[in-house]
Length: 174
Image (cartoon, rainbow, N blue to C red; front, side, top):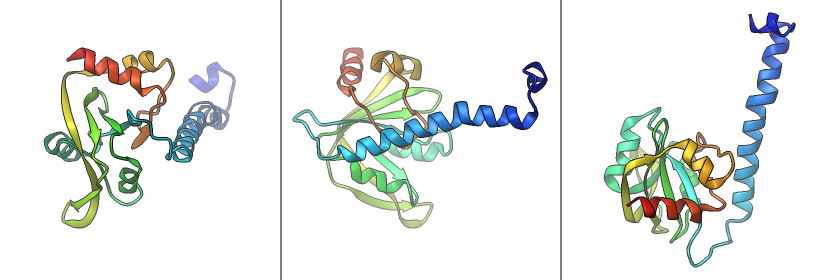
């Protein structure tokens, strides 16, 4: 029906949806991650700011591990290595899909390893100290308003430029 309404073939409609929506979001995420990696050496006295997806949409146990153990973690090859990007003093906001930022803390800079579903070294994590669990999550819409831009929430770990505004918001909420 949509293809007919716009006088397009189904293939043309699918192509437009992919190129105008999915590809643009993917390129944004890729460029954001590339810029973050290029600027890894830029550490201020206040640390850097990151948003870490807790994987709650795929595995509640992963989310619970992060909250209960007060850690920033990633699981499985291709994702777990992102935890190595965190340096001592970096602020990490834990983001649960569909809820928002549910907790935050500062990375201790020491990567630890643990099993994930009985497979050795599939979990990389850093302890967050101090660690604060929020009573009211900060929703994606609100995060975008605070940062005054779009943000790739689905990405495992994303550097936040202007993260000090987000830190102020979560601290003021307490």
